[in-house]
Every structure is written in structure tokens, then in C-alpha cells.
Amino acid sequence: QVQLVESGGGLVQAGGSLRLSCAPSGRTFSNYGMGWFRQAPGKEREFVAAINWSGGSTYYEDSAKGRFAISRDNAKNTVHLQMNSLKPEDTAVYYCAAAPLVANIFLLRRQGTYSYWGQGTQVTVSS
Image (tube, rainbow, N blue to C red; front, side, top):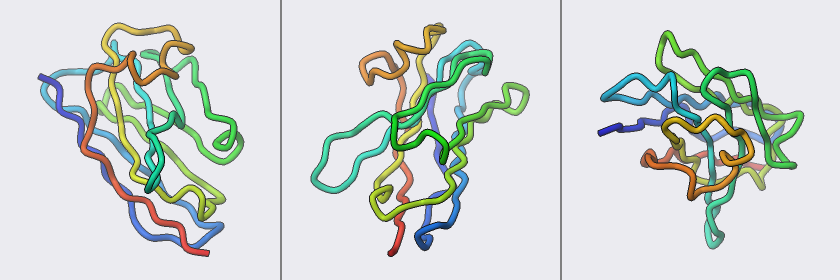
């Protein structure tokens, strides 16, 4: 069973940065596609960013393009989401998700593609 543990959330002022980390436990995740999703209060969970198993392909939700960067270190079994130029509308609970044996970056946009989810980490951006 894969367990995903997110960290790095917190309170930051608008324009600031945060780096989220996700550390899957239980097995190596080098052949997993990985994604980040978020859910703001009163809203549905939405896609933020994804990276394929090799790290060679990434995909971002439009509002994240140019501000967020997803990366992975398979040797350290960790995936990161670097978030810069944060805005109050980025406030949400951020979830890490893992999709075993999925390499297609376009499939990684869909929540139904993922088999494993973390508990989430709160990101709050103050104006």
C-alpha cells in the first residue's frame, strides 16, 4: 500500500513562495505519474500540476503556468511543487496523488487516473 505524505504548507503573504513536498512511503514510486491538486473552501478539488514517471513531461493548470514548478527526485523518492508569486486565490488544501504505471501526461490531469492520495497540506495566502 502506498502512503503519500505532504509537507511544506503554511501561511504566506501574497507574492511569497512555498515549496510543497510529497514523500510516498511503502514502495518506490519511480514508475508512477505524480500530480498535485487543490481544494479551496466551498469548491471542488481541481488539478494543479502533474509530472510523468521520468520527469521529462510536465503539465500545469492555466493559473499555475509560469508561477508553479513541479519536479521529482526519484533517487530520493520525493516530488515537489515550487509555488512562487502566490495569490490569495491560491489558498486551498493541496493534495499529492500517485498514478502507478501512467506515463501519459494528459491522463495525469484527471483525478480518476490516480490510485493514491495524500491527506493534504493547507496553503493560506494573505492579501
